[in-house]
Image (spheres, one colour):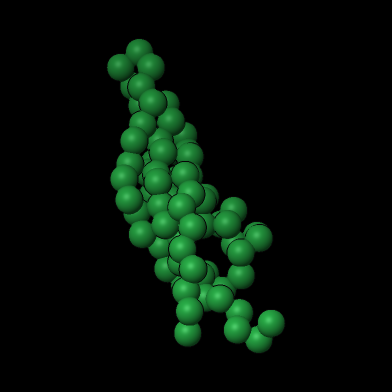
Length: 68
């Protein structure tokens, strides 16, 4: 089995976990066979002393289709 990894940035106004979930959900629309995700780091945008945007840099791993 061969696995390819791509780096993505997910964004959410709710949480870092939601940012990761959104990134994986969006990736699964165009990437088949996703087998794992690694969270690299989390950052946020702050306005007036409050977090307004959560961002998560992630690696998404997917199995390469060897039948092509």
